[in-house]
Length: 411
Image (cartoon, rainbow, N blue to C red; front, top):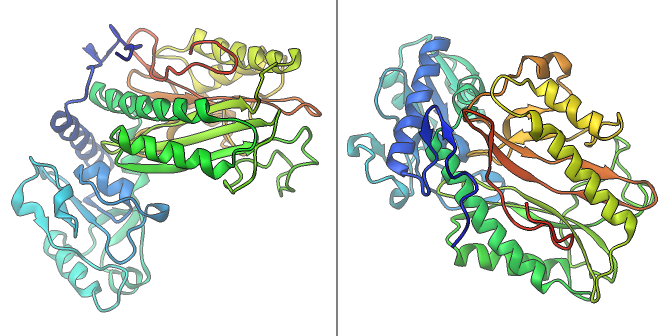
């Protein structure tokens, strides 16, 4: 049995269930979108991206490169004030059982000039000319044929609706994370000198589907870190080159590997990060142990103050103070990011949006954070890991739980 690290925790006075009630999850998630449409004065949404379609409709579709379905994509049309969106999809087997049958339609082809008139007809039947619509992607045919509406970025509505998770959503994220961690444990147990990165990918990908994952969200990363930045690939930003795509590189004795991966399960993403050492007879150095211990102290400093009402700026300052005044994350990354139907979403802490943004971002029950500080020690590589927590009514609850092997400490 997998331990429930969130047992007893509540969000809005409600406990986090052991398993998500998906029909309730979808209903409450859609209600939040309707609230934001009303609050922002937006008449509706037209969503083509797989994450947006899944979030508004709950419909599944086969996983595809970069989250795009090419010509065969699903489209979600959300009307303000309606109890259900309209779903246009070629994948009828992925429609949730409670979805109203009269709101399910055959596919649209917004990428084609030959098919754009069908999208124009559909939207014209739902919205009057001049309607304010949010959109996540606009194809060239859409830009040419749909100038009768006022378009805006759908992220204003979706971001505000997604940042606070319901207890069921938190449970779904935890479930996806558990599958990822079990699959990663299989990969770690197989790791040995002489293996190729692609062999680890094969072990991980096979295992996640055996455990029930519906799609892989992030191609597994097994990046061998060089001792210095100069030894690694050149970057335009001058910081570490990370992440680098997996190849058939052979892993050798003593390699420091930064691991990263994420899956999709029930429409929700996971995020796994650890530092592994390739070795046939592991003997960690004192410096490697100190990297890990410093990473732990940084995460602990942030989590010690994490609760509703605390700002992202306060969390960032706590992490910096625990790292002797040095920012413990890469400039092009962040101290922490959110996770949900996307593998990285709001809230974002420590971005280039600056202290003013972080100061205005206040933690609230239902926010989910993936802490991923980085320890870099020029000349000795470093340590990177990721931990997922949910902000609760009184503090936070742990959603990730795999050991920090080979450092032999439980999350």
